[in-house]
Image 1 (cartoon, rainbow, N blue to C red):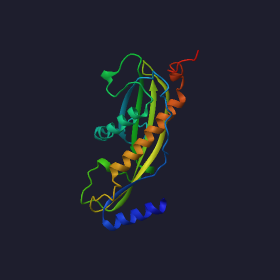
Image 2: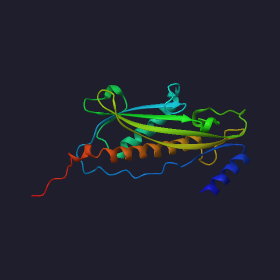
Image 3: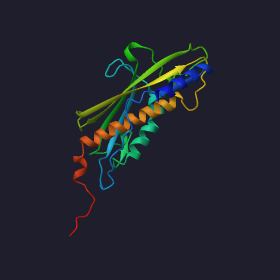
Image 4: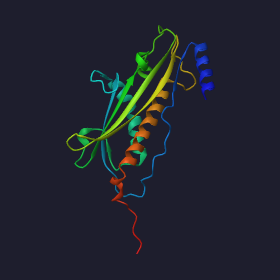
Length: 211
């Protein structure tokens, strides 16, 4: 695996192009099936994307990144089968819905170079360099008063080699790498949420007791 990535980096360099590779710190997970339950929790998801260190009040919101990733977020929640109704607009939130706050922080490792490559608009003047984007993602559950009921987080990263020209290497585009990392991080947090909140499903089992 590492040898293959090294070869790909070398090829990217020889082409004077650009290629991104996930660090795979968060493994792919299988979400539990909740198909046996007739009713599932309804949730409102508040999603924000920041550039800066996690939890830093001075981190900058990046609406462009949020909007680019929102379709992937909606797909992950809708295809998970874990919820009854999922809304991403606060105006669609209904009484009794759980509020989930998902935050993504894009930050540099130890003050190093950061790419934010999938929205950075690379130009012909970029000096060849290897940049690393770290992504810390958190999922927080809130009560009706906005008080936190629990929070979990995970971390992953994407390495991007930027050359003289923006010529993505055979599918290893920055957007593809970020989307892959983003989806794995979301699913891992969803699995953790269900594992911690199974009581929300236990009382609504749709199976009919045998006489």
